[in-house]
Amino acid sequence: MNVGIIGCGAIANIIASRIVPEDNNIEIKYFYDKDVERAENLATFAGGVAVLDFDAMLDDVDLVLECASPDSVKLLAPKVLEKGIDMIVMSIGAFMDTGFYTKVLNIARENDAHIHLPSGAIVGLDGIKAVADFGLKEVTLVTRKSPKSLGKDIGTEEILFEGKASQAVKEFPLNINVAATISMACNRDIDVKIIVDPNVDRNVHEITAKGDFGEFKTITMNHPCAANPKTSMLAAISAIKLLKSFDETISVGL
Ligand SMILES: NC(=O)C1=CN([C@@H]2O[C@H](COP(=O)(O)OP(=O)(O)OC[C@H]3O[C@@H](n4cnc5c(N)ncnc54)[C@H](OP(=O)(O)O)[C@@H]3O)[C@@H](O)[C@H]2O)C=CC1
Ligand SMILES: O=C([O-])CC(=O)C(=O)O
Image 1 (cartoon, rainbow, N blue to C red):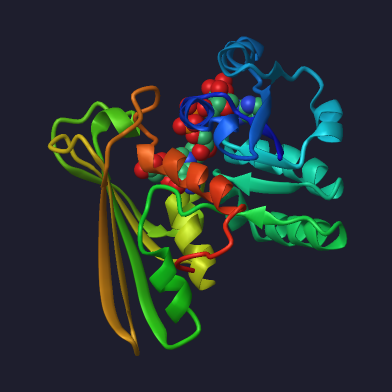
Image 2 (cartoon, protein in one colour):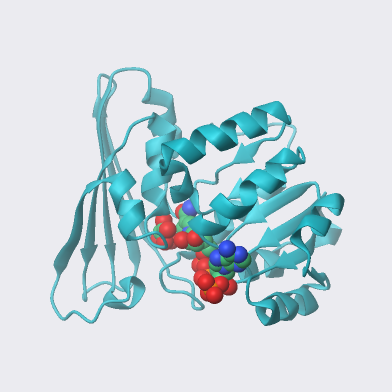
């Protein structure tokens, strides 16, 4: 499977350094970034090709892995899907724009392409998906990150945002894609709180779900990526596992 990557930052670097083509059928061959030097550096490291012409890359890939930004999804996903090429998308917040969501869904259906959304920096999506249509009454996400991760210069704990996921991804497009992932898993605009906390050095995501099934709570206390403290290691790792899972004969979990 030939893979092209959009965005050559923290997630792409982890993925490119952990996917060994000899171990599986995945070859991460193409590297695209609006910063060409970043693409060239990662391509050189990974023994791949830095992409100058995005459209030309699409003639030689089986899958495109986006790890750049919600804007890149809006700009480039339609081009990829129109060619019938599958995608893995990390910047899931892009799909909270309902007009864009409907547009890409139609393009993907018309061209027999598939969009895979990794669980990313959170745990518990399996449960949320399972109960989504079975009396799920309430889902909330409380995200707590350090001032460094949220790009704030604050000495005391402060609530930065309280509201719906659709608004959270507009105000924090590079920090709260997980809210979109949860919303998509249960087909509702979930309630989100974002807290900047100088006493944490992890990216913490606490999900609570209540309904006819009972109740569950998951807390993920992520190590941030060294290259980008907004982003958790687990996000990159989940994409690696998703890529490798395409080969599995027996799949575990949802
Ligand atoms: N689903 C999830 O659970 C998670 C999702 N994410 C999301 O994944 C994405 C990647 O994260 P991460 O690797 O940490 O980000 P980085 O900022 O480390 O790297 C992203 C790279 O993509 C580039 N880029 C941005 N927009 C475009 C574009 N339109 N075309 C080409 N290149 C572009 C950036 O350039 P420049 O720096 O110049 O903008 C940068 O070089 C982000 O959107 C992030 O919010 C992150 C963590 C968890
Ligand atoms: O990596 C994380 O902890 C979450 C994140 O940045 C996002 O969802 O965009």
